[in-house]
Amino acid sequence: MGVYKVQNQNQGKEFLTKNCDVDYPLLEINKLLGVAASKGSYYLHSSEGKQPPPGCPRIPPSLHLRGYQQQAVTNWFANKGRGTLKMATGSGKTITALAIATELYHKIGLQVLLVVCPYQHLVKQWARECEKFGVEPILAFESVNRWQTLLSTQLYNVRSSHQLFFAVITTNSTLISEGFQSQLKYFPEKTLIVGDEAHNLGAPRLEESLPRNVGLRLALSATPERYFDEDGTQSLFDYFGPVLQPEFTLKDAIQQGALVHYLYYPILVELTESESRSYIKLTKSIGRSLLYRQREGQAAGISDEDREDLKPLLMQRARLIGAAANKLQALRDLMYTRLETSHTLFYCGDGSVESTRQLKAVTQILGTELGYRVNTYTAETPLEEREDLRRQFETGELQGLVAIRCLDEGVDIPAIQNAVILASSGNPRQFIQRRGRILRRHPGKERATLFDTIVLPPDMDRETLETERNLLRRELRRLVEFADLADNAGEARMKLLSLQKRYGLLDI
Image (cartoon, rainbow, N blue to C red; front, top):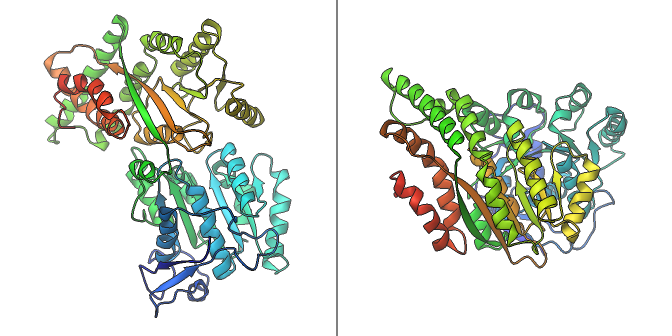
């Protein structure tokens, strides 16, 4: 890869931000980083030439960081060792973080890499990537007896200079456990903490459990802003540091070849009569609540605060849409013409009772009625079985996976070529995560195909129509944006045009 030069964008004497909440010798760390203030630049080291000792991080010989990944490394160092990387799903956040850890090892003799993930399957994925960098991490999750002694031994070895470096990967739930918290105070000053899918760490109990004695901090997320939680979002940025510019969007990732191009086909679905009645009733209840707030002197429209107060009603409405019965017939019609395809993912909601019923119905239609080789992939699927399913899916032994939620964050199955979204969440994070998951690069994968079932609201009176218009605006904006990025943008936009016209949303 060679040595590459980057510009120091933020010269200064102090290493950490003004929100410093650690008490180790910061100026000494700053010196060791090798910020050449007089020259206005510093260097990132490749692994060519002298190799580090076994077990210590090194850049894989075959790895060539993309320009935006190099820029992310640059910006994190320039921000004095803190920051949040807001990069599109599938664009290589894990590799970028490991490149930063490797540079820290070269620059300051980084002693510990601590990675915190929301789920166990992400721990395994991080372990596979770490191995490419010559690191065999401690996997700290499940039974404390499996990892606590090993972690305490390696902490002792590092602090006593008998060991140069080690990495530990844990889950959010293990992080807050007494067993792990009791060890955190012994982590040395030259520790880097990486929060993967870091938006989860803004939750109060998790944020309070993050180690304050660790000053090198990196957050990773395509969507760091927490849904309905401005305070949690701010706490996240206060700890890890702000989003570093420039952000790397889905459009950027496709244009630069980090993600594949795609075709997008909206499938418009009508509600049944009983579903329509329930839908109108819920929408009227939402409208009455908003009207009451407006009469109290608040501005018209739907703010984030409104959405928080209305969350139970909005959730009922979203689940009604997600489990719409006619989606099953739309699935039959679609897959009857695609029985020879493979590597297809079917999304079925958020884990609610309704989405669990839908998952069973979808599996019945695909497997029993149509003879399409599928299996389910949920949070209840054991970790070992998930790995086996992933292998069967990649080889084509299974044509499809029917999934609920657990594929939203971080799961790496780049062999996905087709996806059918049967239940969409109003949460923009899930929207972004799901679409990015489908577009990951894979050998032989030139383009992905996405089918998105979209429920058409029933006819409403004028008052309810205005409420519906406000509710639809955000969701439709995301759909239009995704349609515009597709290779068949014109065709996709025409499908959405009738919905835009119907609700006077042609400005989107």
